[in-house]
Length: 315
Image 1 (cartoon, rainbow, N blue to C red):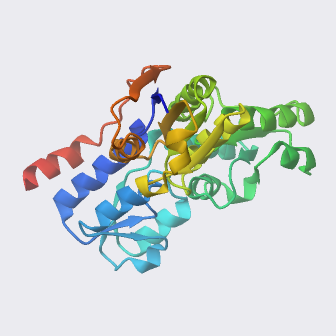
Image 2 (tube, helix red, strand yellow):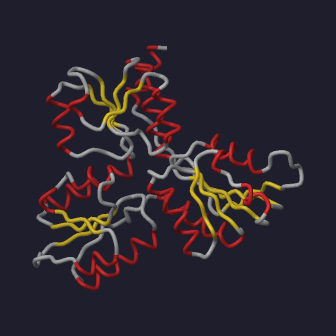
Image 3 (cartoon, one colour):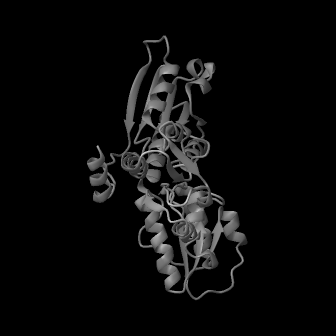
């Protein structure tokens, strides 16, 4: 190995940084225990660090004692989860990524106007469950172009398509082209649903794959966008692996590849990337570490002023 090439952008997106900041503020205001519905972001390291501070992650609202505080994760929740929270008299702090909220709003908009919706997403993913919960009787999920080919829909005068925010751009375009061919009157939201960070990280990994012999994506196996990054690199013919810790680094990665490209998912802290770089170059001074910048990001989401002021008052 002669050099390590770092993708830019990589790692935390604005939505993840926002969700983590919201939980931090909620801990300052309410203290522990603090309940969070689902993993705040799909990264075990982030989850464990919050657990060590007294955050309790639950999948079911019924597992939260009545009258407690609940933070909704970055992935969003369905109206049914909100109803259950109200029933248990929970104080709600919402850390849903604003770009996920945008898709929820589109679902509500189309449902109110009598549309039936096709949702491109991954079955069982918490974001998909939350969005589809906005109109469960007016929405069907497809995962692949093959699903879109087989989709058997009665004729709807009004038909629209929505997308999970963390999918591969190519994957969505392939599925979308099938839907548009089969249902020419299907409507798309004015602005695409795949979030800017997913798109940017996929663009960066394309650039990286063209200059690397091996790609390492630092991220969790449960992270949709991290898995997509590995797949994009593989589709371009570059060997790629998803890993979370230095212990997963293989000896041959240090010797058998000239240029190793590294990126990380939108929920991956930079400290994990640094740990893996440290393992790759351990005991060596002849490996150059360079950044390959594809696009510069300047998007940020700020928690509500009320939340910030309450936290400041407590501190």
